[in-house]
Every structure is written in structure tokens, then in C-alpha cells.
Length: 182
Image 1 (cartoon, rainbow, N blue to C red):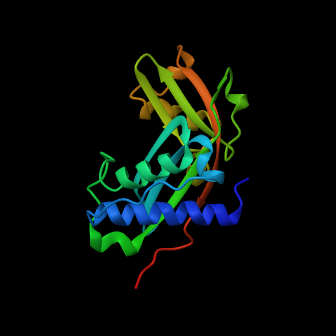
Image 2 (cartoon, one colour; image 1 turned 120 degrees about the vertical axis):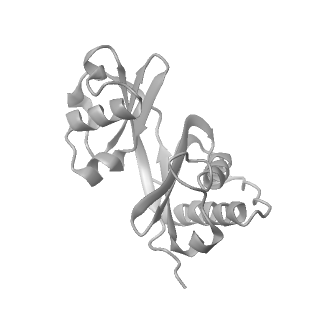
Image 3 (cartoon, rainbow, N blue to C red; image 1 turned 135 degrees about the vertical axis):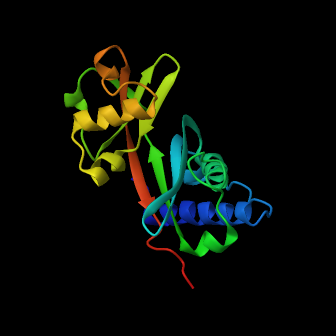
């Protein structure tokens, strides 16, 4: 578990980086020490009025502060599903961070705990990932969760039945309480 003060520090760092990137200012340096040194993967998501506005992540375990600085910057303009964030949007955005555990292979859908596990589907060069909160937010079963991860990977929805590899991971998810509207 990440203590509340450390969560706040990570969210503050992500906010500073996001705003600096959007305003084309110098990014803050990644802090050192304590939790910031933790080698793990992470995702940074931004939302506007409750709707996803960007989400990018890294699975590779790297120094957490480096990962958060990188992701909070690129989520503003590099998620291909969305237009770049404009400065006038910043106060309407909320930031969510997902700090990931290492992934592990699973053999059956029974090993997926909805709300606890994120999911990765891999086959050849195709890879799809969904964070744990996605299945919960949509009310999906394990089978539906896997089907959507297959589709995200660019595979047929039943690819998990024909040789696609399934992996799960866990995430500690936390975010800003609300947008900073003026």
C-alpha cells in the first residue's frame, strides 16, 4: 500500500509535469528517495468531466519518479485516441495514477479477479492491456473483460481460445479528488 502522503506527492508531481508540458515549460526533475525509487510499471490517466481524456503507461519496472514524469508529460499529447490537451482544459482535468505489480501468466479465466486484476492479452506482435478498474466500471464478467482485451490488441474477441497468452497484474489506483475548476 502506498501511504496517503506518498500518493499526494505522486499526484502533485504528475500535475506539475502535465501543466508544464501543456504550457510548453520546462518539466520538473524527477524527485529521488523513498517511494520515488521504487522499480515498477505505472499508468497515468486524465479525465475531463468523468470521461477519459488520455491514458498511457509502462509495464517495465523502472524508477517510479522517472515513469510518472514521462507518462504525465506524454499523456497530454501522445495518446492517439485524443487531441492534445489545451491550456484552457487544465483546470477541468483530473489525474489518476495506477502503480502496477509485475504481471504473471494465467491458464484459465477463473484466475481473473474482477476489480483486482488488470489484463494483458498477447499473440504474436499483438498486445492489448486493460487496467483493473475498466472491468469494474463497465460491469464486465471475466469473459467479457478478456474479449475486450483481445479486441484492444487487434485480435478477434475469441483469440484467447486459440493460443493468445493471458497475463494478469494488480494496480494500486488513486487520483485527484476533483478537477480544479476556478
